[in-house]
Length: 233
Image (cartoon, rainbow, N blue to C red; front, side):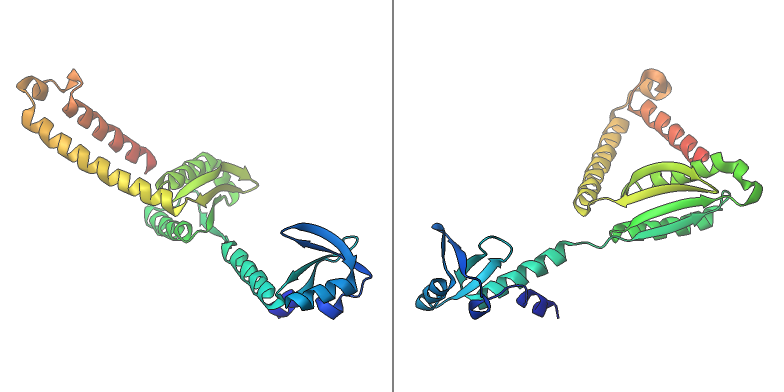
């Protein structure tokens, strides 16, 4: 059916019944009587194909019609392949979602984003639970942070009626791969640097971590990370 649609889109040879046509080619264009254009096509062993029927006069080309149709079908197929169908997947939370349920939905959201779909996460406030809207916002912000490797925030949490929405779009596969490689290199470099620092640390460095050395930074980072996890829990 689709191929027939492309085929019936153009008039060819004797189907062209206007008085004159404009022939276009590599050497420019010229207006000739349709009869003369048909004779030219026969002499060259090609077809007279009407490209722009609404022009005045209609625009035609002297080409091999079968090859022309093949190119048109191939182009249509390539354009269809480039059209990526993006679906919006929904993830629903309650304002007091427990950790197990949160991790379960986080896993599904990662799968949706990695498949190229968008994610619309929302917290539904039932009855008096609207009093916990700040708690719902914190939950959605944590959700966005946990998905930063595979998704980017399209809009920050916003309250619409009894629902607070967060919209996420998938990141490009290339950027995800690059960031993963960068993280691996940084982790290896940090581990190597840490080993060397421990091996060469002086007694002063160990006893006085407040001097800003590597061990002090490691301790501060660990404490900061612990605090973030406690806040996010």
